[in-house]
Amino acid sequence: MKLERITLTHVRIPLLEPFRISNGEVSEKDAILVRVEAGGIAGTGEASPMAGTFYSDDTPASVWKYLTERLIPAAFAAKAVSVASINRVLDRTGGSPFARAGLETAFWDLEARAAGTPLYQSLGGYNIPLESGLAVGITKGIPALIATIEKYLAEGYKRVKIKIEPGWDVGPLAEIRQRFGDIPLMVDANGAYGREDIPHLRLLDSFGLAMIEQPLPRNDLKGHAELQAAVKTPVCLDEGAEDAAAVRKAIRMKSCRIVNIKIQRVGGLANARAIHDICAEAGIPVWAGTMPELGIGAAQTLHLATLPGFAYPTDVESSARWFLDDVIEPLITVCGGKISIPAGAGNCYEPSVRAIDRFRVAERVFVP
Ligand code: MG
Image 1 (tube, rainbow, N blue to C red):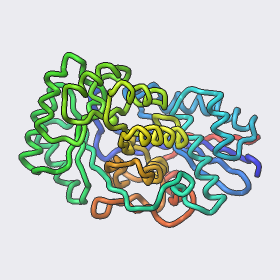
Image 2: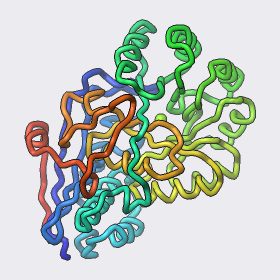
Image 3: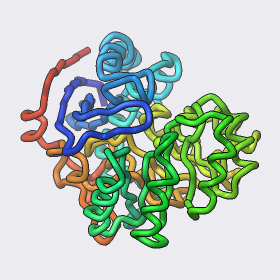
Image 4: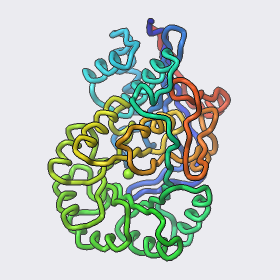
């Protein structure tokens, strides 16, 4: 097999509602689709940074530049055609986990399609329907939050996650418990609190939450350990679990009892699986988070979430939850709170030529 062509397509799809977290807001979803062709077969990946730098340093523009100037030339120079060979290239190059994830996941899809097998099989998972959780951003007032949860809970989502920040935590949680009883519930602060808030965060113990996700800034593993010692609720790391070394350190320091694994944040499926394995060995349950990505990235997250250490509902929701349209066929749908991966090879969803044509903002083709 020979690496024949790589195509980058920047797509931008309007969100149905703005997504607001503690440190920023977006109203459109940008993604860079990476199509890798070898031996007459195509595999597709997705690099899916947020439009602002409020989740990570990577943006659509920086990812495009890094893929164009560094990663794609390096892939051609190394004549990469397999997951193993592209990971050797990416380990040497370093940098930009989102760009890396876009290219690396395309090779996983390519390799599985060439073998005629589904991606979860390459990863070591089993095709089981996956529980899906509803995520709701920070809304303008509690009635809007309650209305959003009510609207989507009708689809059967298996838990609710709300974004919190100082001033938007115990109030909304009390209202949710009052209105929806003991539904599985968790919160995500995207690092909005500080160690000085630990006494306040202890109040969250009274809400019976499944976990508190990334309460403190990403690098404050010591603060998370102090918090975890002070609260009964499990602390979960997201931004702070940026690579295998950080996860090992967090486990050693007792900074968390749960880890959120995002393919984008950790730079691809091989790294994501390695973090899963480290956590499994330490008895730390994990779950699969999202940016959220468009359908290509979401599908890959579903395959990853079939591994045995994934113990909580995934953040992958139906395509219609956030986006005006999606770039795959069929669309991802939640049925009775669960998502089933369709039969097929690779990521088991096909890129939608129609949708990609409609939402393309830039495209560039690379050949050897
Ligand atoms: Mg998070």
